[in-house]
Image (cartoon, rainbow, N blue to C red):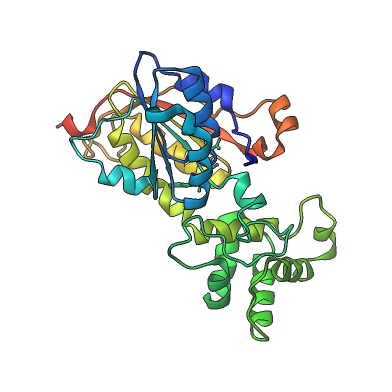
Length: 317
Ligand SMILES: C[S@@+](CC[C@H](N)C(=O)[O-])C[C@H]1O[C@@H](n2cnc3c(N)ncnc32)[C@H](O)[C@@H]1O
């Protein structure tokens, strides 16, 4: 098996999330091919982990790669938010949680599910292939305005309306089921100067579809809240995000959790009865350095934010 994904911000992640005592328990909530987990388990011989991924196929690869660590790693196949929601009082609470959002290089290069326009594949794009709409389903079903909004809101594509219009025109002549057909359609829908830019004109449309198919933005808060609740007081949580909307969601979530009161400024007295739950360990997002971006260009948009939990929400009343 060839590993195709290089873990991003690896040294920075280890720096901020390294265990501080023997025998700690860590959750890798987005295991992928297990790059971060492999490094943590190798460097910290008494660390124990659970690795979670919603994608059955990639998890098989991680199981094979991490098999040598034996009982020190267990696996959960499913969405992390479901894992945290299902864990109860009797379950061990993690000292550390790592969330490395989005998809892996495996999805683009090996999955055959149409994440990339570089190969002609069926337009699926689902992380969890057992349920939900595929990209082809969304393209076939969404009204033109919703398609345009999705492409604009998820990826900031400035030609979203032209692209949506072209999709709707083309689908009336036959189903759009392949990546090459979609990429070609997008290229023809945008102005010529846009085609001459470095990035392929379909880059943002593909990103927007992937985010929509996997509900990535709506799943973010569904994930952060129960993950933080599960974390032990004193424990640390790190989140790596790859685009500005995701990073804003993470930043705002951590900022609110780091304040005693989140009432609007015009409120004369506090009504939220909030209590600070975390300290911000990284005041600004940590970005990859020049060498990392040169050696692994997909890391260029990565941002890491880390918090330390100071208060157990369940016992704050
Ligand atoms: C960026 S990759 C992780 C790469 C990994 N850190 C490594 O170094 O190999 C994200 C992985 O998390 C999975 N994933 C994304 N969101 C998820 C979620 N909410 N729950 C479970 N798995 C998720 C994806 O299927 C993908 O394999």
